[in-house]
Image (cartoon, rainbow, N blue to C red; front, side, top):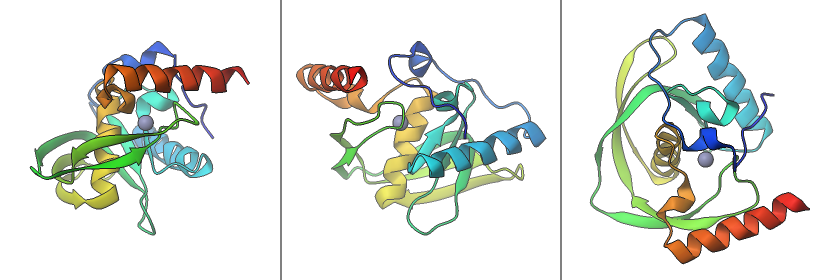
Length: 162
Ligand SMILES: [Zn+2]
């Protein structure tokens, strides 16, 4: 299992770099990320969360096979939005409702180097948006109002001290 990068590590606020070539190193990284995600009982994990500032994330929702997204780009979102409780392996122990579009279209490359355009909705669309935000240095609590952000960070601080 790879070490998880936890808040307040500054790397979580940084923008990740494009993957230039999908080679054995990237495949290896993705496989380790998938194992780490499963071990940590998460449903998504971005490169930055294991200290690799690369535009890659992995997702596993329900019974489906784990999936890696390389150089992803959300190319469309539904107008319809909804809220759902989110957490993050980099901010363990705190959760908050976040409003996001319910469906999306995403363009990315898979581990075989194939370009794919995929539609997603439900929990998968939720996780994809959360993970894609990580590549841009954005964390889920940043969607909350200032008061809510403050409360969540305070609670997190408290949890990290015990
Ligand atoms: Zn996260």
